[in-house]
Image 1 (cartoon, rainbow, N blue to C red):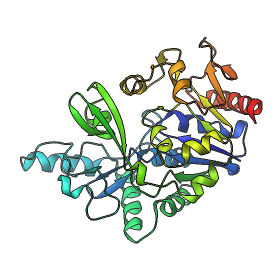
Image 2 (image 1 turned 120 degrees about the vertical axis):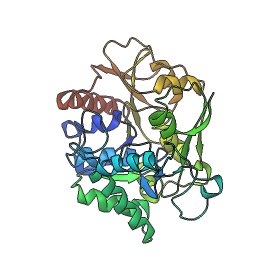
Image 3 (image 1 turned 180 degrees about the vertical axis):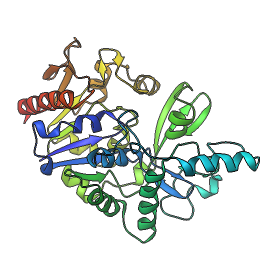
Image 4 (image 1 turned 60 degrees about the vertical axis):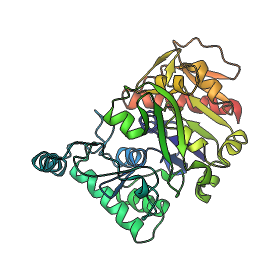
Length: 330
């Protein structure tokens, strides 16, 4: 058994090659849900959905989110209606007293669907409709995710990090904002002062997640702050990571990040934006996989390979390096 912690696009890309070293039916993926938003009454779970769509063979591999070839008629009509009605664009937060009242899926992440600021494809929206409706019927997010995983014929086991809502809030020079507002609406432009995982202290990892963390853990080249940070912020997760073998793949080559806002976010929370900073941020990691051109000297075992992942062959190569690193620390 092996467990991958997933967020963003780094770890999902790595999962393409998982069968090169592991039996996919014995692999569990614990996905970050701090990025989730309620948009127009529908719960959108970007990191869960990236794993679902990748495993189902429908992911848009140019963007690494959404469904390949999806149409956007509903999204476009929402924009048209907003303009015709004289309504300003998004993101439009619901009022503060609505953020924690009413439906349980709320918690500091509720946006109006008027002129929605995230482009949601029509088939993609069907997933969110199904998810939200099943939650409204009383199922947990874990139960709903299992049903969706069946619908997409996933081989690996996919778990949300918690059934309780957590919101990643980025504190910037322009004020506090949900991660999706920071990343999608503002394109990560505002300087970061801090990052908060609101609700994490009162959220719980599910029993299935606790069991999964008893197995060796792989942290792919995902953002250490907003992809992995919310999972780590849950009670008991840090202790579990201390007690099991952990291998991490750096999302940097020395101080050059592969993609996304990891460098700005790491700098904002006081970590050096580099492989050395990732090692400092992951004191529980027993070994690292680094790029062959990354000369960072670490105090833990290191396996080096070309860590750029642009396709299946790349993913398989990095997965084999992960397996080699795990063999050194198990």
